[in-house]
Length: 389
Image 1: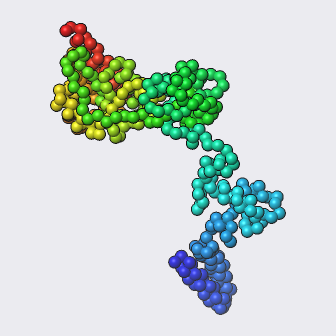
Image 2: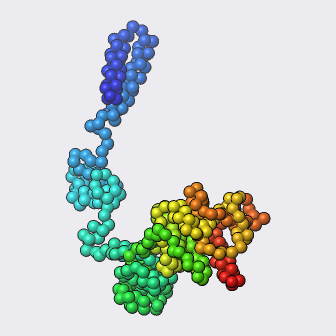
Image 3: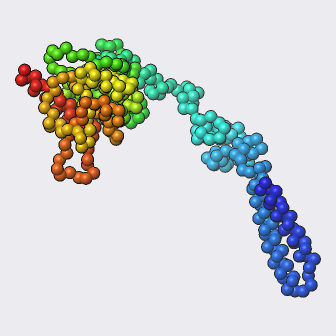
């Protein structure tokens, strides 16, 4: 359509030019006609260029005459080559191949994206550490050591940093790997950095299967003997660092169990294991499909379900005297807190009071810090209550 319009404008300009050429009675008219002709001529040239740009046949394309125009680097490399003519048809085959390779690396055009694995195979190079993994990684001295101690997952290989320094030379890690008949491979620090995405691996990485997190439908019943159990429920904790820190506190303080959501929760991966300092490998964690139904069922079976909340109606944790029955502490999401249905499933809510003098913007604690304080308070009151019996 643009081409047709421009053609009509050009025809009209030419007609106007011819009409002005026939009218030359006086000098003023000639001067005016001359100016109009020059203006029409310029307009016609501009319209012609616009029509040429709008024409599909003249649009710029990376391919001309069936050949691919090499990128600037390829043209620069071929500047002194007699066979290279303006980057097109008569270019050498190697420049055309280089152009296609550059396009592949950039992921542009119709060609496939650059495949590093295929290129290394063509060059006769072996796979990288990441490509040779069988399972998933566990990195960090404490996490790897505890994973080998607990032996809850199948391990395939242990990668140790060669050279001096780091926990890669840990004798206990090597001894545990030898006892479990795990192959030990030595790699450079750079390769381990690439394998762990530049995270602090401390010179040791374990290739192992994913940790199994079993589903739990019912909490165990308490027979009334010994201390009442205290469990920790995590409702949609999405940050692996927070999840790892809470597992570390729960395991260190001695909770009887941890339950989390099967969906919308941080994964039990290498980051979580590293943040937990290996506690994720030792602490048995369960998951449930629908948290509020699980909590309501536990409440009906005699558990005291207590939610952590900053609401005004929540009671001060300092007024919470003792734990005399099975207790389930529920921690909510980092940003939203307890969901509505989860809050309704709780028997009561508790909060940690803030100091009188604090900055207005500091209105809450990190969820992992709050969980550690509340778990310690509940477990301490449970032990104090048992000593009075």
